[in-house]
Length: 465
Image 1: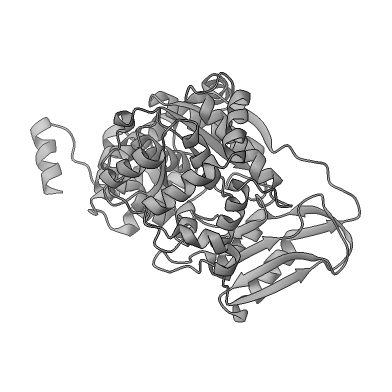
Image 2: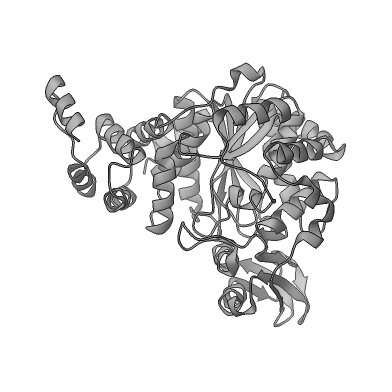
């Protein structure tokens, strides 16, 4: 703080203090760029205690962030550490990001598919947040797999494989690493501005040329209401475009888990089955969404004239095995034991299993996906505290999805946990989350809308929150 006061005296700028910034945001004032940079720099360097950062997060959550504040926060977080410069790879750099979901394992399909089409996919991902799973936690269920790579290591994996998935290490977007962990523990997740800055700071630090965003809506999304999800999608696109990255956002359904599996290792089993060209029952929407996202990435990366052409190319490299080979090469390049995929089901060794059967005959009419996500976490697949370890084999396999007809006594889901004593609460959550009815529900579009720079700006002008 002494250095900051000296600088303020030298430039005749007012001294900044964290308590004043918290108070101003609490009272609804708009933060200046200088205040935001001060906040993020101090957070990244460990100058401010967690309780002060948490207080500011709650103030921002309750008062909201303007577009200007969101943009300044995104840039400050992006610039809080080292940045990756993929130009030397000789490939256009593209990536995708999901705003969170249950059973969402599209990254494991999209990254190798898009790399197989000649693009670079430098993916900086996160861990479990709230009721949603974390890409890094899933990958770390592979023995030896390293997500905390240095930038030179990241570069080498990208050069040899075309894709790499890593964490925001202490030197890559360190401010987000601090804020992200606190948001998960202070009920400040569902803020459009904080979500936008967190997502984009990691993605833009990777030097992307283009970005495809998968913005969830429905019962499993952080933004359950359609209008809130639309606002977030528009804010993400407009902010990323303002930072110079070509971006689109797909509004997608999270009214049920994506695919059959939700957990850590079991999600990799399902992803690998699709990478091998298999089409297991219950994995259709996962395959469809992965190909759709990849199609847009291939298009924005200049390898296809339209998203539809991109989807066709994506399906070709998925079916011929190229994407699978690239994924396994990436696993090995990041220290993982790829041989476990030769015996995937044998490697899955949960401490206990329990089958939940349908309590009556009927159609699966509704699934509260957030509650299902909490069930997965409380089986041992997630954390209550950041320091906790997770069980890579915990999770849920879903045997029925929304719209399916089930007979009384038919398996609805299989729970996997470390020990039987963990089952009661997750079992209650699953039973309360799934509704059976005599009539079949109306189908829901997997992708309901695509947001580009033009309609995103229009949405923000017409309905700024």
